[in-house]
Amino acid sequence: MRGLIYGLGVVVTLLIAAPAFAGDLTSIELDPSGKAIAVKKEPGKLALIPDIAGKPNKGFEYAAIYQVPPNSIDISKGINVMRGHVDANGSIALHEGPAEQGYVLYVISGAGKMTLNDKDGKKYGEITYKPDDILLFHPHTWHGWINGDKPFEFLGFDMQERK
Image (cartoon, rainbow, N blue to C red; front, side, top):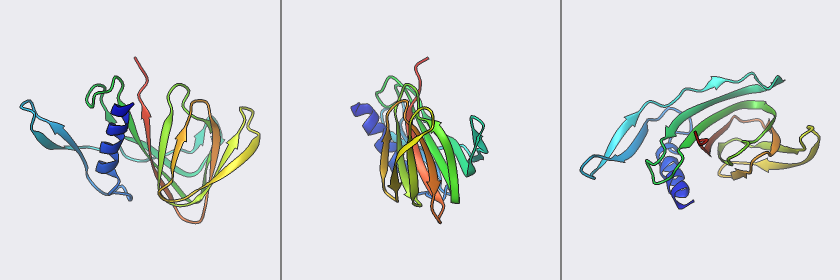
């Protein structure tokens, strides 16, 4: 767990300065002699996600912007670093959270509501999200997103599945 927290801290430090996804992705690594070096990486690009399992989204883009390889930061699994954007007044369809691993979401900008749903889609609650909120998703959590009048930008982190 300490490795995951350290890894997330490193990734957040590297990425949080570029909320408009216009910045560089730099990995601070060790060379063979143990000296810290800065290595430029090519981040993934946002892609439009028109639906989730046939349920329509509105203005939702998502990407895996970088994958921290297993054992590179003293963890047995790697970390997927995800980036998301939802247009003003957009939405993300009802969907299930990761099946086996949790997911951590950091709200960079935007505000709106996230619905809490049962597995049949019935809404039984909602929360309001805003900049600097951190949402921790446990496995099998059903939810949807209804964005407010400003674009919603977020970073997400999950453990890579064991192979």
